[in-house]
Image (cartoon, rainbow, N blue to C red; front, top):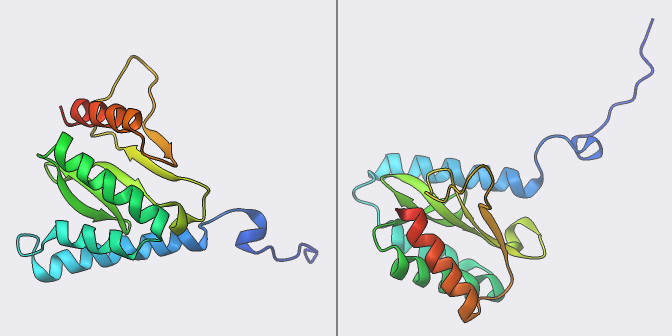
Length: 152
C-alpha cells in the first residue's frame, strides 16, 4: 500500500537548522579551516574579532565594542577569538564567554553568554545567557563581576 503522506519541508516541520544557524556553522567551519591553514600562533585573533564587530549593524556594533572593552578590562587573561562568526573570549583555548548579535539571528535583542568553562556555578541552577539591549553603568558592573568570577 502506498503512503499518502506529503513531503514536509524542514521549515514547515520546524526541524533542522534555520538559515541563520547554517550560516553560523559555515562561519565556524571557516574559522577552523583558517586557523589550521595559517597556524594558530600566526593569527591575530583580536584583529579578527574587531573586524567582525566592524561589520555589524550600528546597534550591535555599539554593544559589541563596549562588551569587547569590558571583557578586556575585567578579564584580560581571556583571549579574543571568533566563535560561530561572533566575538568570543577563551580561557586556555576553550570559549568561556561570547557575544551574539541580534541582527545575525534576527532576534529582538543581542545576547551575552557563558559556556560551561565559566566558573559561575551556584547550587543547582544559575543563568548562563543574558539578553542585552543596552549597556548601562549598572549592567556593565554586573557583567564585569560575572566575567571576573567566570574567569576564576
